Image (spheres, rainbow, N blue to C red):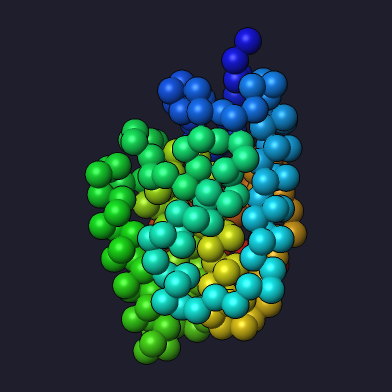
Length: 198
């Protein structure tokens, strides 16, 4: 039967060859996929709880890839691997490793020099990594978890609440989130920081 997915505004589509890497063949629709992915993400969050992680570990390519693999490795064979196709969002697939290294270097500079507040550093990182779009899918959820890791593990601040809603489903919270992303695209990070703390 195969995986039949419907997409809402702002979601990245999964190519047919990427769908072939689904590890659970009984999943046939978006609802089932979201459920299995959410269980996997919760396992990744459990793995992170109580771990002591330093900046020089967090802000590296291997860590960024490992977090994605922990989030999706039970569902997708490509979890943790950079995408091999171009998408409706993100940079050219060949530029991903260089752009991610530059982002990690920039974030280390921001932290070392207190260039921005802790919340703004985490949100700027989240915004840039999702615009790079490293992976075939799951980039939004991955970017939010990376921001949570930065704010908690590096700065010792409370996790973001992200509007306390499921942003995978369509509705007002998702629309507010996308509006805040567009403001950040234009250089105004205030709405995205406020949303993350709402």
